Image (tube, rainbow, N blue to C red; front, side, top):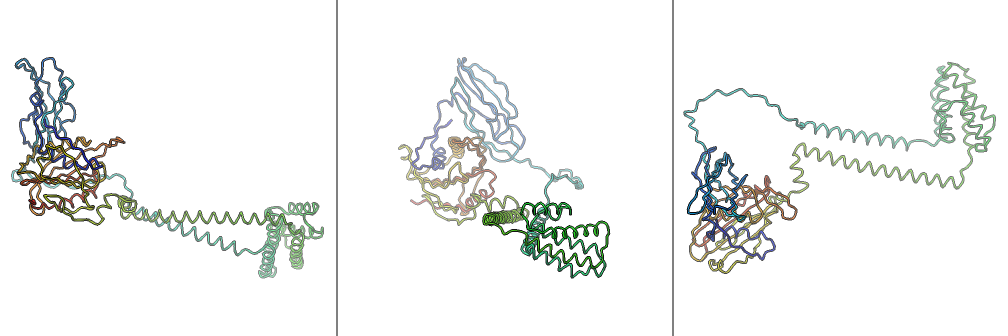
Length: 548
């Protein structure tokens, strides 16, 4: 078991010194007193995919001590296949407990079995982490029996809205909008073209004269249009039910209005109106055919009736005029409101159509990231900067300039160093986090990869990371510098909200005579823009010669 020095940061961003912590953990580890009591070992450091490793925990304690062994997913990224019962041996007055675990992994690569925690009398003791390698199974294709290619099998796909549906929806929406605007325009033109009641009645009578119904002996059509002209005038000017009431009901209404003094009509006018309407009823419903002379006289009487009805309506009072004016203002306000609502609906329809077309052609994710914004997409598409940092200097291209972070260290640590610098962008819990650390030692320091991995693992945990999966591979920069890349997945927990954020990370380590450089990149899992940024940064790294 190893422990690390604790550092105090002057930078307000607590994660700013994370890179330097990783480095210190790699070189300044010391043995812990409890190592003699708890140890772990494996039967092989190299296996093939699917093979099992026997991991043995050995605990030495007093006979009456309570020992709690690790359980569950503590061996991740390896999978626990089986856990045996502990065996007990007596040795020099103490008990030695042996417990075996069988582990496996189905992906090739280099993995680290994390430190295991054993509780002895309410005190925690830890084993060392152990690195293993899982190799692919080599298949000899010259000895493998070959079989003919099987015919393709049609697999049912889950329901998916076809692309043509969105285009059809777009066309229907546009057609509906155009039809609505055309109908509205026609209705408005019709309202604007409508004549005043009296002029309209005279126009109807003139239209009747021009039709020459009498010459054609079309008596029914003649009386239908004649009665419609006078009824329409009555409907618009005096009685708003003039078109739908029967002859008797209309005559009764006029006589009632006359008796109340609301209409100044003579009895002769009312009788003439009654005769015209009754003859029109007989012509329309009883196929009666009055002679031409009578029909022409009814035409003249109808015009006189309309003139008398027009003259019988008293002039509106000032109060009525004010009410009419208020009514017109209310109607105008309603029409304006309707126009505003229709304009808003039309605008919304255009936006919906445009967005639907973009989603159909480009996809939802493209529309969301492009028009609503995505922080790492904006980083990727921004203006990148190539700068040189620290001593030993590291040249790297980043989407933003890395800002210097100051670190306070214990005096005994500082005595080992000539200098150290750390540069930061973002935060550990943010969308994208980068640190670059450079160290210059007094003399030559040997790089221990195993201890470096232990230190990185411990400090990730100290930052609140959990369920850490760690892999390792060799790495070479564009200018030929050899290093080690450590990468994998972890979960970061927000200490304020408790939210668990899945993340990916990549860490580059470079050690040379008297110097050490480390670049840490941590970003949200499955963020394709962040992955592209990471690869672009890593591919741009150049390690320069150490300045004396």
